[in-house]
Image (tube, rainbow, N blue to C red; front, top):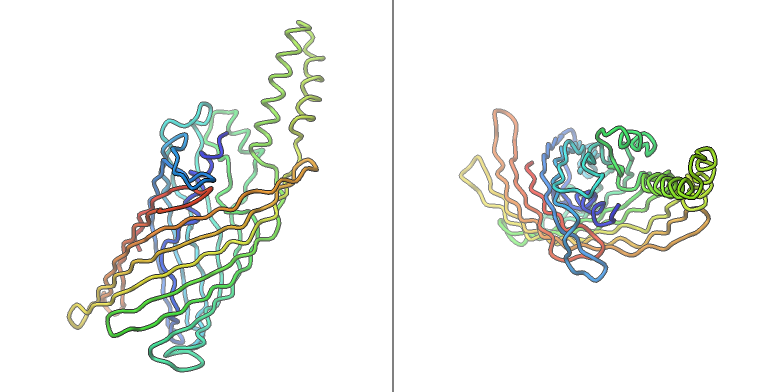
Length: 348
């Protein structure tokens, strides 16, 4: 299975679906977000930063969301599920044998508390500058079973070659946001975050595929030299496959994930009851190299990076007694290394 093809599927995990800022909600006020998104890709960035064709084109549809509640004026509790649930996937001309591969299931849930240290609702009052910090935890929701997926593959059913959880591991993180209000219309936002993932151990789909590939070759080779000895062929093939690709778990020690964002923003009044918001965030993600240990041997991976631009527009208005905002965003990859070049259209 080609790495480029897998990177096509997981690329959507690194694309933010909405910008972060240092705004907190007043005590007792809540905000609910619903975010459908549609991701498209047929290319990936290689280790030299060159954009290459992947082995197939693909699209992924996801349903995401977030819930925030003002606990006290300077503190907002948040639940963020974005990416949320990968509802559908479609791959054009996949590699032979992978025609029934899908990418569906839940991504990780983030829980955090945004604390405004400086700002109109902060512990220190300021009307032009906001500064907020968000400690939090990420919880993997996908229960991925590689052996069950392999059975689905053999049966000709839809199967998943990878988990929809980014790392299948609990993680901890810290986000920092700074906003500067230039005037009534224009502001700028700086955002940074770092996540640390606990090491994980799991049986990989590729391990099973490699094991049975070696088994089949060894079995056929033995029968070619000793026709009819199926018992001997099975014994020889099992020993060969165990030596070449034993069915043992792979341990991954992850590098720290970091992300930085700069967004100029404009807020324009549309009469007395509505506002138009325009943003142009530039987002750079950088993932430190991980270490993978399999069958007693450790291999250091490579760093990965991605620079995207995500122009967005939204309208805030009242629908009955509730303020409602409708937003559209298109995220376009600009530069990267060892990462998918996925474009994402999202509504919010």
